Length: 79
Image 1: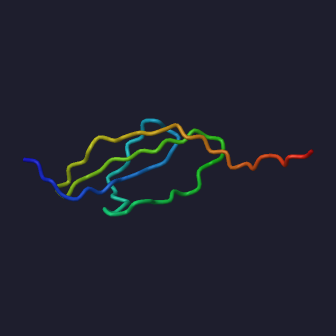
Image 2: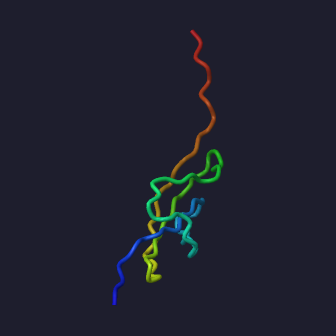
Image 3: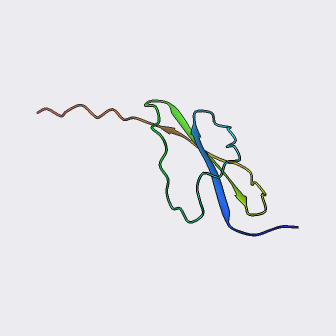
């Protein structure tokens, strides 16, 4: 039996390409964006997401990345 209902995701940022997010639904349905905690400069970061429906059926995790963070401003241009 397959139950269809609203889907709520569990998300996670880290530096491991294969992490599986826990079973905490940390974004509610209808949310269009979220903000992560600060990510370290210069590391490879991966975004992981999996969702669960109202019947408690967790889907496979999707892994995206790597993302490289460079928060250092460029040097001033001089003529």
